[in-house]
Length: 454
Ligand code: SAH
Ligand code: SF4
Ligand code: F3S
Image (cartoon, rainbow, N blue to C red; front, side, top):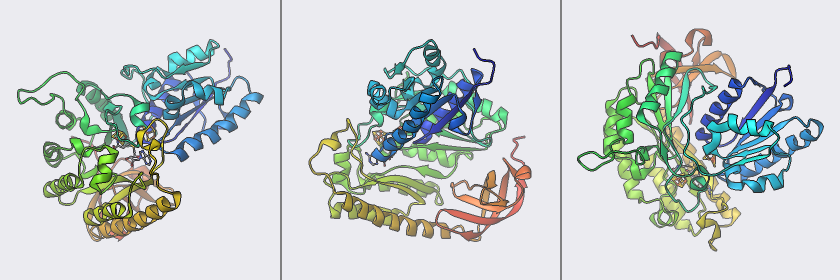
């Protein structure tokens, strides 16, 4: 053992699930006595928590990794770890490609980081990618934010969308118990957190793997039940959740969201395509009509709700007319935000093997046209905020203008206004909106509520 403090660095790619995993892994490393280093070049342990959802995400990992593998030749005691979805997808092959690696660990192994590192320090090169039951988190995450926090409720995915690597790399669905979720939220409330985002790949599929059936024959612990069970945790003022799958988004869930005051009026429900034939080939399990009905029902209960989604263009066999059905859906619904992507063929997925791939030119042309429409629709949606009074939970200083703070409305619009972060961090402030842009707002503060539950 050396006496000098050893440092670690984590770079996280990909989705909120990976970010939450990184916070837990950072917690493990701190618990082991390591200290955070912002600069990877000052670190003794480097962990890349990786994403493989599209090819460009995966390639980014290799370029980062190449640099640190080189550094290891000058600093042989450097510990190099690849965690997350690329680790799971590539496994042993990653060691052949980058022999300098010490540890390759899939997402299900995040909570086992301490054990795995011990094996590395004993002189082993370790690959941990076998499917396992995810252990309850016994460590304390090192959370990046102090006002908002993520809480995992379900890991994995049981769907089989024909374009997607997630089921291969994240494994089958594993729901945490309602008690474990609530306990973590209560701890967050005690620590002064104000907002919790519940996380899952398909969060509304929560509970299908937990025991128990109601007399009416439905699962005893659905996501709706979970919301009722956790909504009154002291100190937590706002609840959000992501990502929702249209297949499991019930009217009962919508009613719960309308009824429970802490649940914010923002729903992230990816539709992927506005064309039924494409949806079928994607194996999404719904039609665009069903998707529209869900959004209509949400708006019946919560007329001002913000809706965001993900969409893919250029899926194999997608015709111009089918793509136009996606444009039509976007036009009709009016999303507050849409994450768009050109289809990327992924190893181990059915659609990657189909003959009818769409050319890069057509994909990028469709992506541009869709993005253009999204920006127009989002700007239109923003107009409704002008002059309105919105409740903003202050998270941070505006990095571009330190006289301003920033936070989010209940509908998840980023909002800036003049104020001091020292006074306002974690406060709920009524803000009169004076300026609107497609994806953010500016306003003037009216009154501040000390966001402490009495
Ligand atoms: N479970 C969520 C989405 C998780 S993956 C759901 O089913 O809605 C996040 C997003 O990445 C997806 O919504 C999809 O739009 C995009 N994505 C997944 N695989 C992709 C691929 N092969 N090419 C392009 N985009 C992809
Ligand atoms: Fe991927 Fe489909 Fe699962 Fe979402 S539901 S993670 S898109 S397989
Ligand atoms: Fe990427 Fe894995 Fe998330 S592939 S999008 S980090 S589940």
